[in-house]
Amino acid sequence: MTFQHGQLSITADPRSPNPRQDRIYVHYKKRMVKIMTSDIRYVEAHRAYCRLVTTDGREFTLSIALGVLQKQLPSRNILRIHRSYLLNVLHVDQIADNMVFSGAKTLPISRSCREALLRRLRIIGK
Image (cartoon, rainbow, N blue to C red; front, side):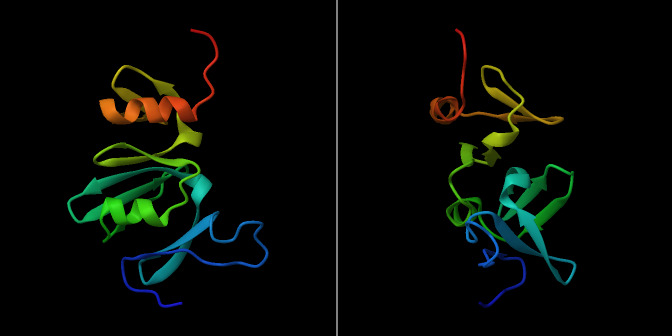
């Protein structure tokens, strides 16, 4: 497998139950850093770059467009909620009319993506 600077790569680890879905490797300070996909909190687009934020507060800047990154990440839990944001539905704390709260961060939800997000969550009551 070939790795390029600033690109995202999905690896196949034979010890993993689903090796191409549970982890990614990103270039960071001349190293390849493993990130478990369940630890991704959200991804924010910044022009031709993306800022990937994990649950432990680490941030990685990737030189990849958000749409390309979305196609490379497993779609089971990662969902587009806005033209500039991907969100891991495992880390949704609260939802308001046009916002979602994940940790200390407030993210916008577009009207067209709100229903898709609500379908992915288990909602009890009204």
